[in-house]
Length: 515
Image 1 (tube, rainbow, N blue to C red):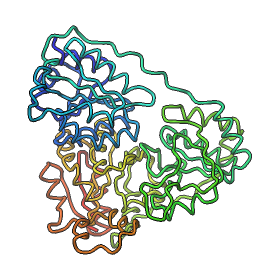
Image 2: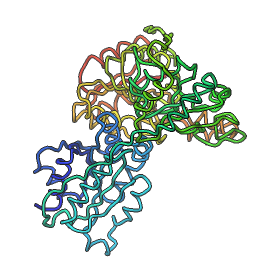
Image 3: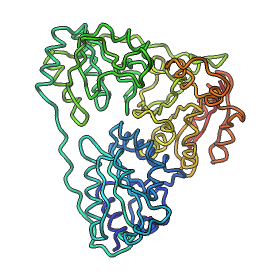
Image 4: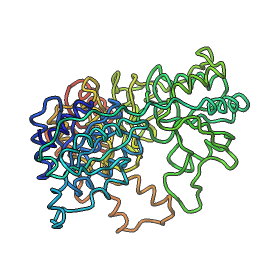
């Protein structure tokens, strides 16, 4: 057994049985080992950002890490943007990055680079295997790091000779860190605050609190104390739809967020962070909570927020009897022109039972939450890190993790072009993903940001850096070129029909919404 085979066998034995790959020369012995060893599903991506984003989506839905296979420093660098997003979402990933043979590194060949230096900003655990006999143990340590609480990104760098030289066998994965429960003192403090001034307290949640059960507990607490429950602007995963407590998110736009938060005196943080603006703007605050408002952390990432919410509800004597009915927006199938409202209504009507919605709609999708609260029960995934090109790879990984669930990916045309190669992987693997591209032919978010930072009125050269025209992008042709059936729609009626057909038919589909 060589080092590469010892690593693959260790990965499989450690429960890492999917590898999203984009290999090169230095990884060929690892590719050969993947071919020989049973138990590992290998999914090829045509760009490393697809590979790393797919691993993120896989973890969010499966709750266990996948591995990636990347080619040297440049391959890792190509995948860093979606590793940034995965890090912000606290997704566990095991990266395997090839390296030149140990004796070749000193010759400074063209692809030589500081791989550890590239890996560290996005990885909590980084190691270069020194020899073939160390590879299995290093792989086991990487798995343990990825499975820790909170989960982490682990990057193992594999020099070529450590892959092809003789190894001793597989290694057992160390016991992962026990999941931290929660602080009873923090729960007691939250109970005192809510009991004393619930009407001026915000329960701000994200992460594991946004399961169906966690939301139900928050609804009971809100009914008992009068507190407001909200989510951060973006979340790794949120249970939504009929029968689930629908909560608002803090708006992205500062001018919208400030009036919503202005009356709170206390914020109880459930895995969430203090509400801050995404960017700095001249003469606008970075911190969105009002002056004098105190933040109190009840749980942090990696802690058991659902158990903490159960303890908080018990301390407050909150129960299902305290729940107040929610008024949800009626599901109305739209007709006529495509508008932000009609698009939201069409999507709300089309979401099937137990779907996974991956949202990178950015400006188009800011109004999607109210109507989709009444959709069939589903999970909603968002971009925690803000680096665009997130949604199509995450949708790909989510579909690999949950082949029995329909995935709906919503993305703007600018974001879609970053990782459009995801469509090829979806076609090759027969993944059940409906990609909806909102083609407004402009980086609409940046047009708004241009005004937001007070940069003045954009001239021709500035506009040319924001618009996606000359030539216009043809997503139907792009999708068909990668083996994904596609169609364009220009009215709400056409959009309804296209969504119905795409949801009904298995396999990947793309709908270009021409706005």
